[in-house]
Image 1 (cartoon, rainbow, N blue to C red):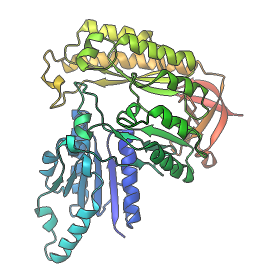
Image 2 (spheres, one colour):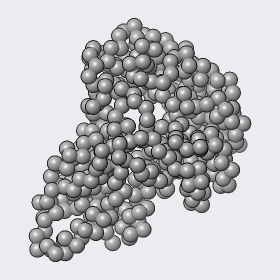
Image 3 (tube, one colour):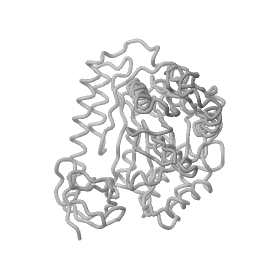
Length: 441
C-alpha cells in the first residue's frame, strides 16, 4: 500500500479541499500518514495571502523533500497559481497545479509510474527531470471543485463557493482563485446530506466570498440556507466570513428565528476610516457597517460577531488609525481578527506611496489586539451563570477537551470520550483564561 501525506496552509476552504483530496487517494488504496513521516506522495495545499504565508509554503516544500527525497512532491493551491514558475524551480518538486487543475494529480502519478518502470535502473530519474507546471491565466479558470471535510475535525467544512469578483486593492485572492463561481443549491444540499450520513452534527459553510453564492444564476445564499435547514441529522450550520454588503437584513432575521443557523457572524471591516476604505475599494462605508452591526444586535443580541481589520495600509495616518480604533471601540462586537498589511505583488496597493513602517504597524496591531481581548472578555462574561448547548470537540489537551456553544463561547471540561461529537446542555459558570468552566445539567 502506497502512502500519502498532506499539509494544508491557510483557510477553512483549503482544509475542505485537502480533505476531499484525501478521500480521492483513499479510494485508490493510498494510506494516509503524518507529514513528518516518509511517504510516496506529498500534497502541499498552499496559501498566499501574505508574504509570511509564501515563506511558510517554501519551508514546508523543502521539509517534504528532505524527509523523502524520492517521493513525488505535488504543490497546489493559491501560491501554486500565483507563483507556479517559482515553485517549479525548486529541485525536488514534481508537479505544480494551478487553480483550474488543483485536483488533477492522478494522471501525472500514473504517467510517472510508467516512466519509473521503464527506467527503473535510474533511481533518481524523477528528481533529475524538471517539474511539471499545469496552470493557466486566471481569467480562464472556470471549474468549481466541490469539497468538504470528513474525519479531520468534529465539524465539517463544506465548500459552497470559490473565487471573488471584488477588486480590493490589497488582495491577491482573485488572482489566485479566479472569478466567483458556486455549486448549485441541489448539489450543496446533496453534499450536506453525505456529511450527515457520516455522523457530523455541525457544518461550517465556507468559500472565498460565500455571500456571492449563486452569482450569475437565479440562486442565492439566503435560498441555500433555507434549504440546508431542512436537512435531517445536521443540527448546526455556521456561516463563515461574509461581506457586510452581502449579509442581508432578511438573512439576519431568518437566523434569529432559525434553530439550526447559529448566531455567529464573521464580517470583514478592514478599516474604520472611510478614507482608507475608499483606497481599499471596499463596497461600503463605516455608516453602512455600523448599521449592519446594529441590525444584528437588534435581532440577535447574544450573537458572536468577529470582525476583520487591517492595520498599516498605505497612507493610513495616525489620525486614520485613531478613527479606526474609536470606531471599533464603539461597536458592539465580540472579537477582532487583526491583520498587519503585507505588500502583495501585482496589487494596486503595492504601488501606492506612503507605506507605513513595520514598527508602527506592529504598534497599531498591538493596540487592536488589546482592544480585542477586552471586548472578547466582556462578551463572554455576559453569559456567566446562563445555560447553553455545547458541541464537544475531539481535541484532548492536558487531559481536557473543548467545545463551543451556539454563539461560539468556548468551554472546557475533563476529557471524556463519550462526549465527543455530542451536543450537551451545560451551565456556564465562570470565564477564566479564554475558556468557560462548566457544570453539566
